[in-house]
Image (cartoon, rainbow, N blue to C red; front, side):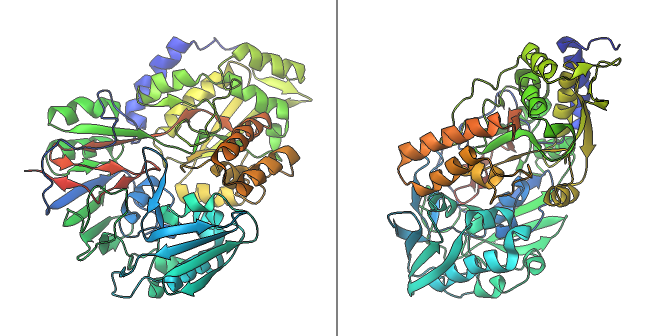
Length: 543
């Protein structure tokens, strides 16, 4: 039998490989966790901010955006009906100056601001709301715009009550929609753009109402945004009125962490994605800082296909949860600005509740497997009825810490007799195989500042990557939280849903994601919005 791999040995082995493996997404000691790069002083308009992305945006279209790097770019060109205060979670006016919700939360009436225009000069009206939402459901569909379509689940149409009043209706109660109206994916493009195909919308020639405009978009290379002259309808969350301060934002793709950091320290870039712990001294030594904020939503974890392989056994799924030493994952791979997952929701999500069962207890894991008839084999991996306790996990490097985390998880699971095989693929292949349910388990996270992300992730009418059938208690709770607009009642239902997702082995949580942005000393007021993505409207450059 193999020699046991101790925690100390694991730390040494993984830490030695981490610097070479990780390409982004990690925070650093001494980070500015306030989520802003403000150093004080009076904001000055003008200048070009040069930003280094860790990966290429996947599509120029906000409705089809999924990855953080894509959202950082696309968020700047479109506005949403509402905005969510990142500190309080309260929804504030943006393109809608007011709104009303009917008694059962099946219809939402928005009164729009007057005088808003798209960058092609055409007016933003209630008809724009209708055409954008219709296109998401009927043209893009969930195949191309998974998040946007999930926010519009049950959509029956938008009624134009007058040029500045739109009523968005659903087949049944849909309390989550108001928060969804603040998301990037439900931002607005001009009539010309919503008439395009999904592929045409990805190409970058798009007109939004946002504070910046696409000047140039080259897939897998760069994106350049310029300030929208005359912009005057910003969100109530923004710190100032009128136009953005920056004249231009130049996004370039710099996959190598060391190159990004060196470019920031030498003044070739002004801000970068995915700063690493080992880069902190170089960034801070050049007068910069690292900004961090935790992501709300579903933390990183395994989503098992419950119809395939050993993960069809509920006992196996249950045994994995206490086998994971989440604090070791944070301490060894990520650093102090990350958190171990403690639930099936991340701790910053409205409605979050910590779950006692998400606790490291390898003896409990072994006991569960023993009781289910999985006995240790000659190599330490358990067997039952001639089958090895082995499964593979599908993942991509969209968050570059994934591989190092999963290599350490692989070692932790082996200690309780589970063989984990790592299946690293490109992001497009991961997306395609998820859609086809072609995996034993898949590993990822999903960000949203609303507990309804449990429905869109685990519901039968959501993505349902678990490939599960009905689970009446869970299905009822996920449906019930859509029917109530009472925050306390909805919070209780979301708390129940978190426990039921765990009890049924639909999500096996590991760690919570945080954003970590390196910023030069001249970059002021670079801020995170409620879903932990960057908002550049208030950003300015000091001398």
